[in-house]
Length: 220
Image (cartoon, rainbow, N blue to C red; front, top):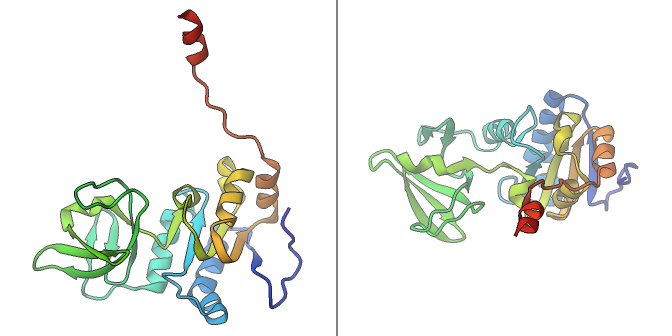
């Protein structure tokens, strides 16, 4: 189990207790918006990543994207609404499928530069490269203020905040928690229940893949 003793001023690991999803969501947004940026001099959009065990639920990536987007980058007049999401300048977004023509791939994160209603196009900066999207192509993008831990594999961030509640019990596994915690380079915060963290730590069994491959091979 992680050490949950009260952190000192030099600590790079924090635990914030929240027993209900609604409380956890509030206790995620406030530190991401102000406390962490103020204390550690980090940009709340570019430097802090919320990582969730699942997409669904009150503290899943989808719900948290809505509240984080409203808190960190409320849309003005220059915006577009498509496929259940709002996109506006400065939004952090993620590509969710490979696009070989645009040379943008599943899991790539970029930042909206502009939304042009006259041309019905949106431009996104991916690592210094501007890529244009027609409004009809926005089904390949989602906000990326929060993402699943699975999507974060192979990436690192200055700071990560991870909700860990029992509502995610089907995904609470030691390797998943380990992956999330090790994405943070400078700071890691867990928000949720100690019981849920204990469930994840104790659950070291990898998901087994069941197939009839061995039986088929023996037949040959």
